[in-house]
Amino acid sequence: MEPRSLSVPSPELAADSLGFFRWGRIAGRVLVTTDAGDWAYLSEAEFGDLLAARVTAGHPRFEEFQRMGLVRDGLDLDALATRIAQRNRHVARGPHVHVVTLSRRAAAAEASANAGDDLDVATAEAIVDLALQVTAPAITFELQAADGEPLRHFDVLRHLVETAVTRNARATGKDLRFRLISNCSAMTEATAEWLIGRDVLLTTTLDGPAYLHDATRRWLPGSPHADVVGWIDYFTRRYAELGRDPQQWHVDALCNVTRQTLGARRALLDEYVARGLRMLHLRPLAAARVDAETWRTIGYGLEEYLDFYRHALDDIVALNRRGVDLRESLATIILTKILTADDPGIVDLQSPYGAGTGQIAYDVDGQVYPCDEARAVAAAGDPLFALGQAQAVKIADLVQHPTVRAIATASLLDVQPMCAECWNKPYCGFSPVRSYIAQGDLFGQRPHCAECKEHLAISTRLFELLGDEQDPETVAVLTRWPSVRSPHATNGRAYRDAP
Image (cartoon, rainbow, N blue to C red):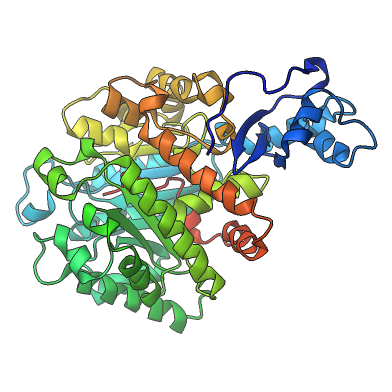
């Protein structure tokens, strides 16, 4: 993206005739965006005409600009306000993602546990009761282990799910979803059938072919890759046998990108295509979450990752053009914000950030946090984000908690320097908790925010592709990506820091 000048690009500026918009230059043209998420490409001449109030009735783009709210002449303020409200309705939705940690035990020490390392039945019930208090009509329970395998605690997992279903049917009548984040190392056929029968969705991790996937999982016996792909195939086959729509019912997989992955892009994509997976969740490593010795082996710079991502995205688009149904997760989320009138409900890309208002996380002792990243901060010894015990608080207490309010204030892009004037503001968001981890304060500094750079780079590439009038086939591919919404799409977070 060409750097944006902070100076007015034209000496003629009829400010009183203009609506509010942001702008930037991409691929030799001017991109303008609005708070309603509307966008348009303009030539330099058209941009000059817009600023000088020469786009009036009879101009070929007057009605388009009027509908977008770029010009005040004939502006339908009520319609504009309705579109803005639609894109920001998440602020009143209530916490709809409830991340439950079933165990703190490290994966290498699954057989031995200290007292209090695992979620117990009474605490699980308290978590269910608290979660069912939310105003959101639909909620998702995400079941995980902090650094191990939640299926090793299947009895409590099963009790939580059955308790939630029973109490919801008896009292609240919400649309419940359950998602298990598992490495499949403890999966059995009986467990798999129970998960399928209870509509518990499976999200696992697949980092590529065996030599990539197994390289960072040497603590697991045998071939972790063989376990994962075997269970992906099992669930895929069983869904087909039950007649379930594969667009709606399939296994989701997360990909941790290491230094080795950067040079194995094609092998990674080939593995996902071979397994019939429909979504690739690319997750960059964060130096703050990896010890220094490990980082020297598998870490990389942000620019290296962004170069990898850009080429991977282009490769995925090329696969789609050949008839392969594969999408990249973060690109799909951003495209949904660009191409539709709605917000996909992903707390990681919302303003304000949805910690405490869209997502709540629970540790094994019932301690409640505004998001799972905040729980991880506490696990590292800093209880700054703790909100109270599930057994003793109400949802209203959590949503109105000063910590939740501080996170919302810090993440409101309209008041963040640089974010407030960035053309990508309608499609972006950042986590103050990550800012705290990386920079030591909630607000952070945008020039040093890896999330900002990543989101801007991805949005820029997407707009480059969407604006290429010589390649309508690629535009058609990207336009399809937001259209299929599976049960996995209701999770509410982009899995940046899922275990």
